[in-house]
Length: 181
Image 1 (tube, rainbow, N blue to C red):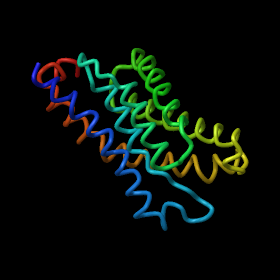
Image 2: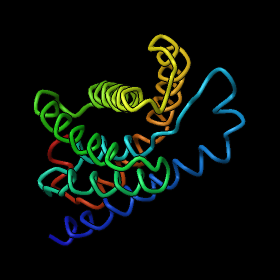
Image 3: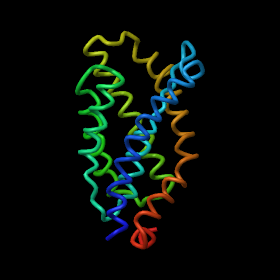
Image 4: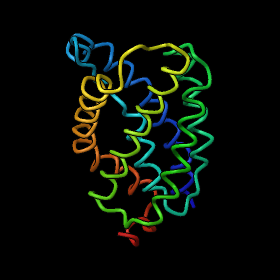
């Protein structure tokens, strides 16, 4: 019981830390990440979200609520367009939780889910910003110069951070986590 209580605090703290770490990485490495014509965006927030959904177990964290809160902070702090992330992130949580039922939580199945979640997130962001005339690039340019590099960067982050985050969830969840592996 104490272990799941720790997870109820660690998950939101990690979620907000990943949000601000994304901003820091994007700022510090902006010369490399946003070198014309390419644009790579760090999305550790999505990585934390996907891994949290797969590794929460029986804890039943209010992940959709936390996703809405993080989305609101993201909208307020980074974009200034309120409601975009506050809507996209909880919808993505619901989709991932639905898809999770069909997969055994292995490295490859979680990697595939992360890839699809990141594609959904970036594409939804692009479509909404295109609808409100906040961006003016074509769909093919978005895929070639924004989506593909962003996916490549974040898949590298996934490969590097998968085991440490899995170990963190294993440690905070205790014995019940070991029984599902």
